[in-house]
Length: 87
Image (cartoon, helix red, strand yellow):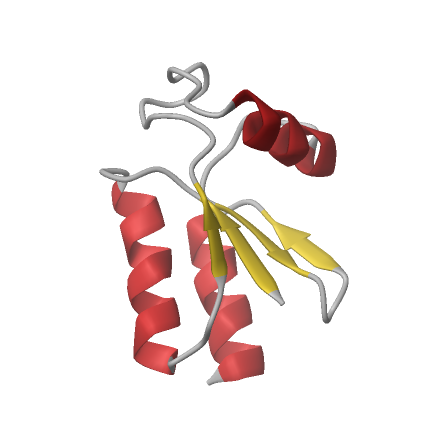
C-alpha cells in the first residue's frame, strides 16, 4: 500500500500525485497541514503526528510504501521510486 502525506496547492505534492495518476497506482492520501514549508498550519493533528513519527521531520510530500517498507521525503526521490517500482 502507498500512503502519501501531502498538501493541496503544494507544487511538489502535485508532481507526485500526477505521477501516481499517470502510473495508474492506487494510494491513500493524507493532508496533515497546509503548504508553506515547515510550520504550515496543521489541518489534522492525528495525521500530522503520524507523519512526523514516521519521518522525524515536518516535510511534505512524504511517501510511505508499506509493501517495500520504505519511506521517502523528497518529491524527486518519490517520483523516481514510483517509476522504478510501479512504472
